[in-house]
Each structure stands twice: as structure tokens, then as C-alpha cells.
Length: 394
Ligand code: SAH
Image (cartoon, rainbow, N blue to C red; front, side, top):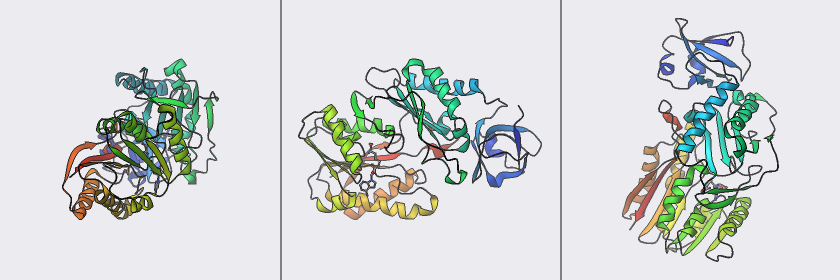
């Protein structure tokens, strides 16, 4: 294929030989043919040896690799990659299941498609591009999803206004690539929920907490639950099915709280155990006394870049310290960080400091991460982003 060529500096081929899927701009010696941002390029080492094919982009990550073998990135390529991903989700029992139609079909580097996210909600797939190359490939991606999943998918919504690089000035607009009039109710482990991909956060729902929500269900019986940063109430309806005594859901977004109420109503109509509050987490925590014995802390990413890591760790420490201070004796805390730049060790240390500050006896019951439909490419350990601890607080 006649793709334009990117030549690396000496020794800079090493990470590609270990299948790491990014080429940083500093590794590039020269570029032949002046590729446009988002164009496919081939990457070569100093001895003119072929290394990989990928999407070119202006910025710190200059090439996102699609193939480490010479390949034509055509319809058959997209179909094959999506087929591999879909086969995995079927093998996991997530796709084609009777009690579940919500799963992540494509998890970027974890599915060898850097820059692309696809989440499935019932018969709708939400496609999100994080790179210019994936933006240009969106129609091909949609066709490939349809070809692989057939009738299972009737609508494909493209949602990338907030995730594409602003400087690329693509003027991208969110909208349906296929279909349109979608039913906005989906199912996860037998629980139903409304999902708003048009105006909701991310692709509309946080699928990555599915297994952690299931675990919470097992701990809920008879407990007074506080679901902090509840978004559309995911953990809350699992707690209710797990026979919690009462469940309070808190989020600063009034829209998220309205949706939480709708979702609880969908699963447990008229159930008075649940109450939702549109309020800032710190303000809410400040006011409460020791009334909860199961608390979930699932805040938004406190650090989006390495240079704010210190502040983020302070934030995690502060938030967890309040929970340790306020949770009832014998209480259980589910605490999370979804910041990619915060390592497992960083997070554990922040929670450890918070525990020490409270002086309480704390034990780690479970160490949690993202589920199997958010796989981590072994050559791209950065893909492991979700960290959680389940703690027993005496
Ligand atoms: N636990 C959720 C996902 C949480 S996402 C689930 O399972 O679906 C993080 C949430 O934190 C978002 O809904 C966001 O609106 C909310 N949030 C952000 N800052 C907040 C604050 N200061 N106080 C309360 N909620 C906040």
C-alpha cells in the first residue's frame, strides 16, 4: 500500500518491537510526503525496516498503531478487528446473553484499535473517537459493526465532540451514523436502566463498574448505603436488589439525579428505601453523622494529566478520610479511582494515609479493577485505569 512514511530515530524502534502501540513525536527522525492529520502512515526503523501501520496525529502521540504487519486498512481490516472483539464479548457471556445487553465492544488499545471506544446498549452502539484517524474511519467502523453484529444493532450513534483533539478543528458533530429512533433502555445483569447517549456523560453509562456493582450487591443486605458520585444510580439499584435497608444516592449533577430516580423507579417502582440528592459530595459528607455502614466513593478522574498528580492524590486522601471518619463501625467502603495517571500504588497510598489519619482499624477485603470487556493490552499496561479497594472498617 502507498501510505506515507514516518522514519524513526536510532533505537526508537524498540518499543514498537515490543508491540507498544504508540509512537511519540520525539522518536521521529523524518516524515516523507507530508501526511495530513488522521492519515494512515507506515513507520520505519533506521535500517529502512518496516515496523508498523497506524494513524498519524499532530501532538505528543504522533502515531497510533493499527497493525505491526504490512496491512491495507480497508473494510475487511475493520470487520476482522471488530469480529475478534465481538467474539471475545460472546465468550465472556456479555453479548447475546438473556439478562445482559450492555457491554464495551471496543476498548481502544485493549482491542488493538487505539483511539476507538464502542459501547453497546441494547440495540444501539455508541462510537467514540479519541483520535483524528478514528474520526475519519467512523463510517467504516459503523459498517463493520453492522456487518459483524447484524440485526442485534439497529442504531449507531457517533459521540466524539468532547473527545477529539480540539486543535484539529474537525467541526465534528455528534449524531446517528445508522438508524435513529432508539429505545433508551438497556439491561445489565438483569437490572434495567435508561441511558442517555445524547446528553449523558461519556457514552451514557459507566459500564466499567459492572462487576464491582455485582460485588456490592453481595454486601448490601440490611445495610444503610451511601452511593456517592452515583451518576445514573448504577450501584444504587444493585444495592436495592441486594436487600439494602436504605440507599442514598448523591451526585452534583441534577440531570444525573433525575436519571437515578427514573432508574430506581424502573426496577423498584414505589420503593421508599431510596432517596437521591443533587449535591456536592464534600458538602453532603460534611453534614452527615455516622448513619451509613456501606459507602461507595466513585469520583470522576481527579487527575487527567501527570502534572496535577499531587493535587489528585490529596483529593483522594481527603475524600477517603471523611468516609473513614463517618462510616459506622463494621462498615464497608468501596473506594475507586478512574484516573489513568494514578497508579494502583499511588491510590493505595492515598487511601492508606486517609485510614491512618482516622486512626481506625482497616482491612482490605478486595482489590478491584476494570472488567474483561475493558481488556488491558499486555504491551500497553497504561490501559489499566480503574482501581478500587473494598475495605472493612472496624
Ligand atoms: N458511580 C457511577 C459513575 C460515577 S462518574 C456509576 O456507577 O455509574 C462520576 C460522577 O461524579 C459524575 O456523575 C459527576 O456528575 C459526579 N461529580 C463530579 N464532581 C462531583 C462533586 N463535587 N460532588 C458530587 N458529585 C460529583
